[in-house]
Length: 377
Picture 1: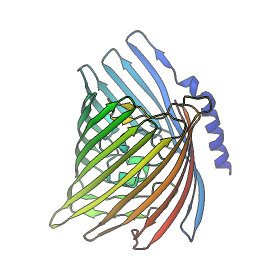
Picture 2: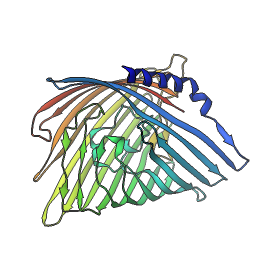
Picture 3: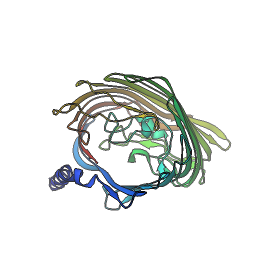
Picture 4: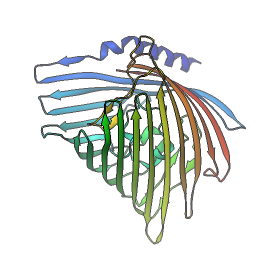
């Protein structure tokens, strides 16, 4: 109870002060800084038919500063303070002096996948879909991006130890990583957009082992899927395809991901998953497409009463292959998002996750109800 009270007080404080911190600090005509951050406070309950548990959590508390150094150089530094030990999220420098091009050096998200690259403050649901367990998280890389109004291409080379995507999946320790992401707009009109894309990532783990595991689209759920340590892994490759279609207040998006783990003197391990999601804004607002980032941004309410968005998703992930028994799961999620304004959002998701079998070979159905108060600035 005391923990929940502290989280509520912290959330209230952020709601009152976020507009104060979201301001530019101008040093001179060429140099300026902007403070920013996000607060996600979650509560949830999970029922597997035998046991039921409820909990609350400070899911994210991130503070950062972005810098503008002249016309062509940008910097970003962000930490997550939700745990006792601060965690570095973004720390990079970016050069924009070449037309339609960005060159980035530092720690940031790996540009693989579609939902992966959407900010956690703009995602349709509280947590990313099941297949995100197959993707690398943030890592230190040199990345080159080329973007036009009708498409983009990103190529990067990374090394070191990656962080986990969404903090609910894990992969490897020391590694080398080569990745690419290409997108194309088949339609690009004011109220009608059709986006397609493809991703590729090849990882060479130094320890010749890797592991994939995840909870079921909730930090409150039990870790139902886990391959355990996959030994003799010389490399693993992830390939993905994506699609997103938006017309007025309706958005439909989906992805399919396939990972192949190559092993010395043993059969390859094949893991795969996908999802399809839809969102409809009842109050009429639409998500704006950002051509530079190849992503849809969040809702900006047109009315003083805010905006309401309804969302639905079906997803699946299979971590069983050869003699690897990581489990498989299929899930359905319904949700509603209320945007008080473009800074404050309330989220409510209900998920039914069917693990058949899970990593232990059991058939389990989890019913998950979770809610979030989100403040960003």
